[in-house]
Image (tube, rainbow, N blue to C red):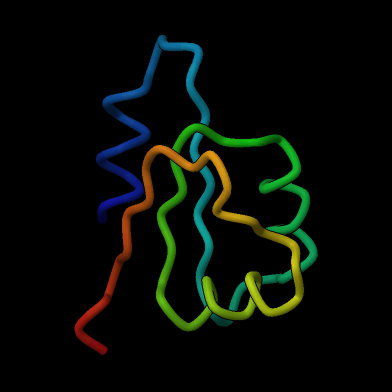
Length: 71
């Protein structure tokens, strides 16, 4: 839901967003992260996975939206 709304708000703008969820293909997410999206919507567990595997660094990150943080 959050990602869909964000994509709608970004329509027509030169900003990109990445969706990082557990249960989805990890390598596809790495490719999305390598495009240096302006926004990342992530579940906490998968975010931790990417940080652990060093496929994501938070240096210079301006916006991070944690989805399903209550789980």
